[in-house]
Image 1 (cartoon, rainbow, N blue to C red):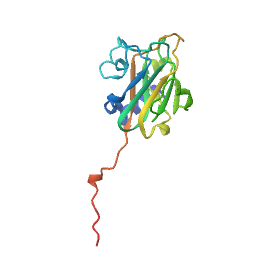
Image 2: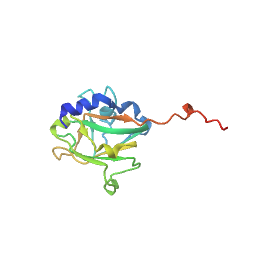
Image 3: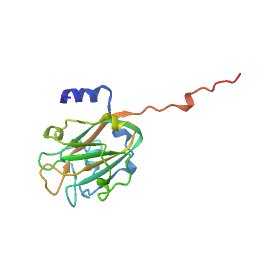
Image 4: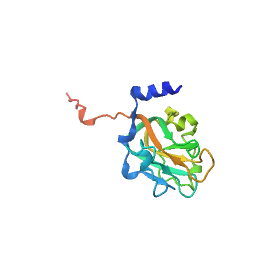
Length: 177
């Protein structure tokens, strides 16, 4: 799928899932206190190229994003510089309480190695079948482009759709005869 095709897919029937993030439960392990996750994830902040999420003790970041409702995730945009932007990104669905000590115990739902085009904003199209009933997403940034100690993420955007649920109030009771 070309960049134009993937951009068209995003515009066609997918939405930025920002409005469906449960902000009270969002966590990021190993983030710098002065360059936190909200710089890369929140509306307004993530459009400012001067703001970044930065790792602290080493290059790895572990990001947990719960949603307010079940979603289908189609693609993800992770922007960063060609030097210290993320390289290997592993995505896990519906896994709570993951830490650096147990992240390798679970097989990822998908793994992406970010290219220079991805770091400039080209979406990574995911294995859609594995991202159908997502209540939460864990993003493990394993390393960065230059193997340096600090990973910098300028923007994270998630594209997909909500899972339609049945409105029980809208159902009519069948009268017994």
